[in-house]
Image: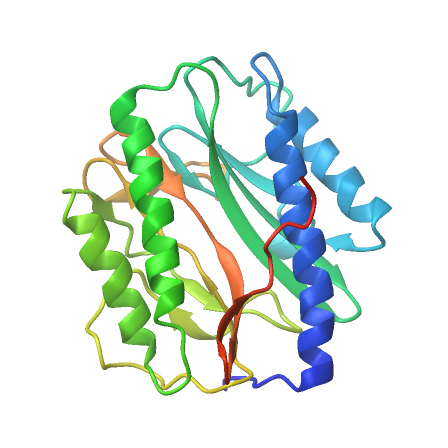
Length: 252
């Protein structure tokens, strides 16, 4: 069942979204060569808690971190570790959620660290562009497939692989709600968008090939090709005036 939010519920989601977006933005400012993903996770945890919220991911399905931190060919769900060190030239995908007043926010960004190859920077640029092209389609009266098709069309035009085993989703009182929001699909198909829906649009795009695999830890998803992957995400609200990004950061 798709949960349509009231005006007061959307305000609570906006609060959760701002903390989420700010935590992600702040984490991006703190990334440096030589830092462990454990250190980065602690920075995110402390920021969320300091702002009166709880990390949505901590303990979710048994996940041990406050954020998913994935490097290079890791697509999503990387577990923070003292042994996982960030190096010059890495791309670091951080996926963050914050829970407050009964609602979640969910957002992700892939940060380049140091001297990243130009072809990898282009992957990040195109994936981020596809997120906003998807958001443009999140208007009342459209369908989920319009979002999916916009993401797919943009990324495949560059020859990139669309991860199909993992998709965007509704967000609200639960971190993952209906409907699913794939990054591939046919325009004009899927559930119809109505004002009050809140969804996470999150392109997960590989430089080479769509196939992925899961490590023995049961969480970390990697590209089978060994190529880098990019992940960008915003929680948005469908409103009568168009899509509103709930997880846009408010800090500089």
